Image 1 (tube, helix red, strand yellow):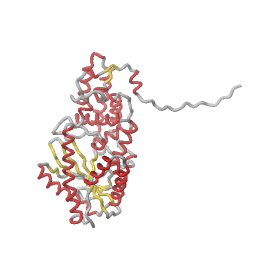
Image 2 (tube, helix red, strand yellow):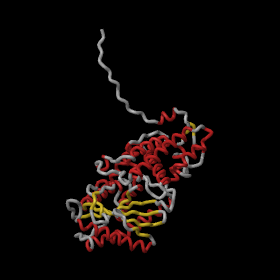
Image 3 (cartoon, rainbow, N blue to C red):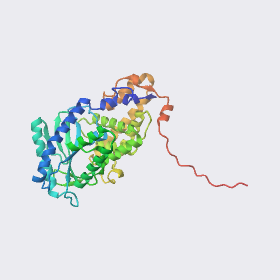
Length: 392
């Protein structure tokens, strides 16, 4: 048996699969700059329009937050560009003083969406970006042929923002580090609240293009997933990224299981294998092949209200399940090769992940079998029933 773990991840080596999935430093810096440009353009203009266009009693600055895969730390660089793009999810949050039973006044949702889209259209003309029209729940800005920024629009009660910012200021003053205080004040200045404060917003609604307010808590998935990472270690996050890379390799033109559905399906039944990402990935692929065929709900995210598999037709589910089974079989087959066929093990993996699996046989070790057993977490067993007896 072979150990394939170092092809996927190594704390000591570079340029393995996990490294090749990472967006480059230059890509990250470019997207951060684009995100900040959007933030700085929207902030004063939305504030000016809160009275004139949105009908609010006083001018209010919006707040901003990076969400999605950059928040979960599961963003991957897709293998086929420009057909596939890196996505940055950047939420705009509007503190609202008038809060009705189901959110802000109904007419504000449409006005909010139209307002932000028109402001971004001006910025796109100025920067040479492209505004992608027609998205139902966000505004998309194409900032490069390999990347876009999605901007969903939210509202939350103003008093909750006030409470959060007051708490942030108190914590900053109590901090022993001057740098922490400076960081907090800069975040507050630019409308990006400290990360740890967002989960204290209790009421969040999202504006849609059709002019409706939709209940939405974008932090719910992040909270749940980060709790699972705490439970199962960073191996869970890495395996989710491997499977996103697998999805992108097989569905070149888009489609396949969504990133969120992959995360939830894998985290729900994850098996940790110490020092063996290859074994953890194999088990995850088996579970994904089953989970993807049915409904995918999670009590800890939204009381099981949403089926995260609902974007896939039965035909799409069947294809994805088949490919996941083939991946699990390929991983098992690759591990079973004899020592002199290490190159074949790499070829087996590259059929499912592409040439970002490094062609380096020296990264493959021999698995005695005992190591795989030690890497497998202990399973709880039911204690045997011992019947009472009497002697004599």
